[in-house]
Length: 235
Image (cartoon, rainbow, N blue to C red; front, side):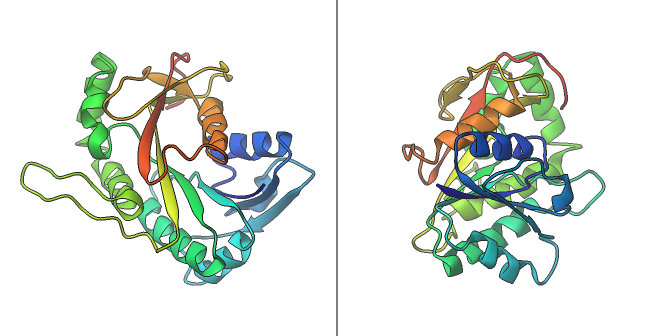
């Protein structure tokens, strides 16, 4: 397939690029600094700055002809949050380019997976506390991006939110548990928010799961969590 990968130099995105090429896909890798994208073969490297006003047109050109977009966007510390804004631009470009499918990375604890995060044990409770305090802006950014893609659940004092993705475009939200820089274990847990996953998952395994979505459409227009028992490294 032809796959556009956004955030291609990030912790998950770099693994997505590698494994997509290993699987024989044609890859269009988008990054702020494409010189840092690793790989060879059926690979096109494209510079993109989603904070730029010109990003929409550049995205449309890069996405055109792709079967699916895999968004590995994440905000860098000390910089403006980019996931919500970037997701809007990606979906608009997909509509213009007539690309039908996207998967985006969010996090366990967002949307209707709050209780799933708590079920991870002490570490989940600690992360939940951080997610609702010092990391609250990150959580709100991811929640807003999820709302665009698949809508949001009703809260205690709020109604459910309808998605805002364009007609003809579908989306899967991937919610990893704690991300680890450990090597792939070749196995990981997958569950809806009502289920349970392991508390730590290798970034490489998240990348491998995202690539299964090229063929697997069972999570379309919804969210799925990915976890495991990877050694705790990274963040």
